Length: 68
Image (cartoon, helix red, strand yellow):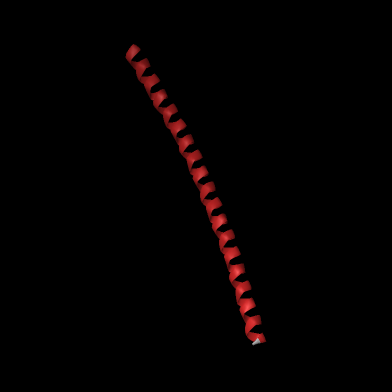
């Protein structure tokens, strides 16, 4: 009887640990996805700014060439 009860408690403890671990892993996954998305958005913003700068410089070069 005592052995059966200990076995049941051990199984319950294992199940609780698995649930807690699963929850923690899911939270880590969500945090990593958010960080990845933030990095992606940041890179897109930087790329957009660089592209705008290059386009502006091209336009300035065209204006300079047209004046010569």
